[in-house]
Length: 117
Image (cartoon, rainbow, N blue to C red; front, side, top):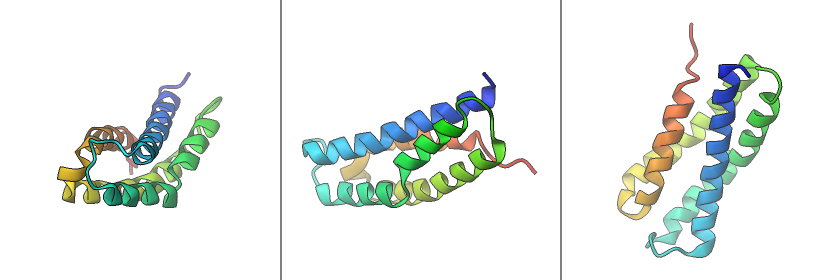
């Protein structure tokens, strides 16, 4: 398996895991998060930027063959949503601290796909 394909699949797994984690935290009304309205806003952005669909598509296109152009397009779409969520979580870190580690991981994984000119 191509190294680039492995990176794309790892990113897809982590995107899916992040989306599932946000949804699980919101549905369970976890005691770790005091203000669920702020978590709901993050959940809305995850749905708006279609993180689950992006993760599934990344997995699908990189299952058998590396498709650099389409992978970079999907990573760019994901990055747009992640930047907004990252800024919001950073601004509301006292309430959403539980998401910072996953966001940091996603940010570093998506940085592996920087466009080389």
